[in-house]
Image (cartoon, rainbow, N blue to C red; front, side, top):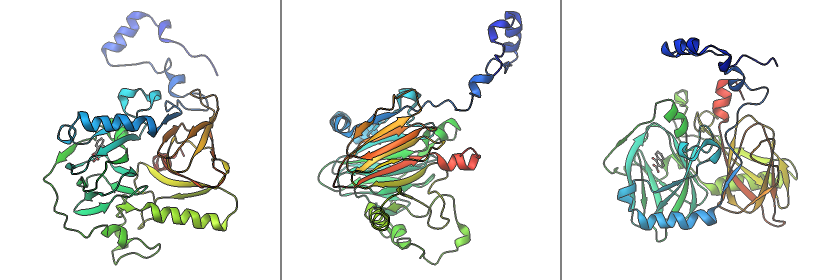
Length: 348
Ligand code: 1HN
């Protein structure tokens, strides 16, 4: 490619005249905004291991009462994006949230959409627009854009979940804001939206043409997803075992911004994932394994080990190889990526 002219080659008086009029020459920046063949990929290969994160989260429980935090969260910030930018990937925010017995994280609603993946503890529920959703290990609990939500914990020990939000995207669109509300009346049946949609292909008597971009189902229990993967494994002795979480009314991604899925690796199995444009987040639901990423400066491709409850990120345009290090137990991972956005924009 031809070497293009630089800023320094331009007379200072000319550069000053441009700046004064809010003008910028394109050609000195051309190659950096349009790199050759592979885009800029700030997301680095990163692992947040739960064992070392947990004591710091519990310490937050002692240092900061819920009233002073509203949401008691340690953000999983990707160093490739700069910790201050609270990005795990360009569009995805991740945080580990702690609620102690008897606490309530107060009611509010906001423009970013959120999914919670329950990591440990039991006895909590999130009330979403009046519908209490039970929170069990590995479940996805959804609070789509604009829906009221508060978290209540009636169990004995601490409860911890992974928050996954499209906050970095919505914030940079200058679209991020919230309002607070009174505590909700739980006026709907517990897990109603889950029971309404709990059988594949069978839905309540609704007007299907309303099909919204945000899914009407608010809870996706891990027990169901796990059973589905195990059943797929019983029928296929090789090939990647993976599912996508979808809106049961449209078959499309549960959010327009972030795509969610789950992967199972059979005991001892290694799988190289199809090369894709979008960065991806992995959260380890069950088992232990390793991840090797090829094709990014943040790694030399050496496999990185992980265990249950760890969270990892990998950039796009790479080869990701996952290995289940157990010879007897399956490995289950939750995945989150930016594929719905890439598809919508025609860059997937
Ligand atoms: C939020 O509303 C929650 O409701 C968690 O639990 C994390 C991070 C940024 C903005 C809003 C929650 C959040 C958040």
